[in-house]
Length: 261
Length: 275
Image (cartoon, rainbow over all chains, first blue to last red; front, side):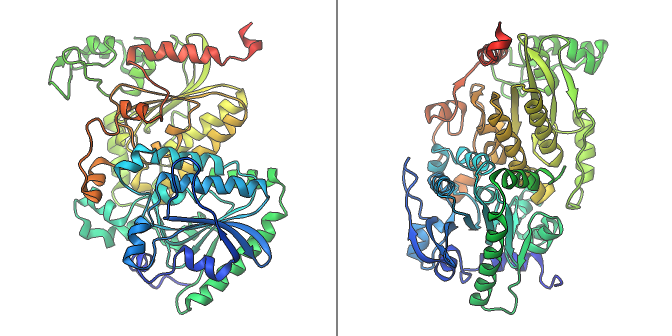
């Protein structure tokens, strides 16, 4: 597969309002899905859908970012940018998955963690930090899939995993191209140029060894992409389920340990 | 002033230019400046300490052994002009990277120590900073040592792209292993501690101490204002705000921090070592 689009075209595709997000993949990959709400601390964050269901008769925990389709739904889900209670709900459900020995599937697609006074008051940084820390020790397989925009720390908070998957047109970056262009050149209009330099496409990340699997999209329907993703998830669940918790955690540590070593 | 003399040379300390308070503009002779813990002698503002200055007033004389001093960053994504920025930061700061790591004694207690330095690209974390802090936690785990970290950082280093983001996960893994080995980690948050650093090892301490009025947060203040249109309350994201909301254990005045660290380290000494 060769690179056929510019980085910024992929950024725009990843952000497209028509692009399926977490709810779509749950609907089309997971049977008997039961949504579970709340962080048991403060509230329930609609930007993250969490729950359990079957993927081909295997029970799994699914944690998915969702921005919604209609404008009303997008307001309610604050455009898919999770608040601290969203990350804390995710961690609560991951701990439950560990207890019941269920694999965890995280679906990532958000411009980033919610940016606001209330999120800071409730410890946005602490919530993400706690997820990174705890996910490093979670004794059950974790597979993270970037389906849309993987926006910085807010994406990584669901991204500490055993297998990292990206859809072809998803992007994953430390900063948005606009943010990067503003800081470097005081000009957000140079975002396309910044996107190239940031090396944020699925092809870049596969080349760097940051992700293990790339799901092709171009020329395929959403349903075809979804069924290919399901096939990859099942094969990874089968592979990871054969590892002991010690082997799993050791491999997870090494996966991140070697980045920039 | 042994460490400063070691870094600047005995005569060079004498020849250091006076420091200027960024708030009131007072000129403070360098010797007086470090004797006052880099706090403005005129208005009391906490000025940003260099790693060497922090080291000098924190550790027992002669106890610091630096590790990975020569470890330097690369340009993992070939970001334009980044190498030139690194060279410039190295010249300006006299450091190879934004963090100094080693082992030391604080009040007679052995520990692993890392001190970030904002003079090197705002203490931002790229692969070199991530690698150095990871190695320090790994060494401390292997040697059964507590870790003390003085933190100041603008966040992940944009010029290293996804590699810098992944350092947050990498360091978190090492902190987790250190924690599971039953060892103590004390994070000291100084001005400013923001972005991906707040969202990783700054908030993973068993004990979290902050300096008065230090800016500590995840999202940038201007970004929050522009995104939400809300006016930020007075004292927003300052150390006092974090204490009120339950995210740090205490605020300590700078001159007291070494004593508090010694007390906490001694409280966590293994029974066998205490005897």
